[in-house]
Length: 263
Image (tube, rainbow, N blue to C red):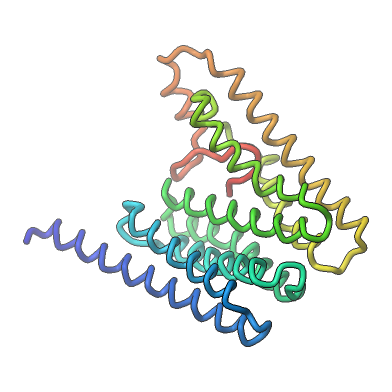
């Protein structure tokens, strides 16, 4: 076996070990939630399904092994799976404090993985995609939870990104790269915070509606602005596409997600 093949095999074995640790972490979190909240069979099924799906996607991603920042994102994905399990199992009866603590932990780590990627110089397109999908899933779960209290219109906060991805399959010009935007990052950060506040039970109902509504309005504005930009540049000559992409792709690989769902 050549040296290159041995390195590939080692990296594959490392990824398998890392995903196994991630699955163990998911089971451990579910056990903690069972002890604290009495998590039922539905929660266990959803939590295990989230963990298994995460492992399968990572093993099929083509990534040789998870870097330091990816391991932080893996922890966030485990927390998102735990949040999904709790919400699916107990719905409106879920402990607001426990949901807030688990989701807030994932949101705090969202700031950590980007910092780790920059400090260790291990940023990658696959890492950015992993981070983005973890963000999107957590926001979807939180919006469904908050929707139980203030109205299911809040689910639009979590669904809008997936609707955009579906639209990309029909309208190729929506797949274009976007320029970096501080406003987009701010909107992305606001979504999770707003949903945790709205679903925490610490604010009156009308305030929760106002907070969730403001977050949705900001997200619609951000997506609308990005879609308008993509529409504007859709007719640029093909010869300029390479130069355009080089100009707008984030350092470390990967294009920013439209509307505020990227890191």
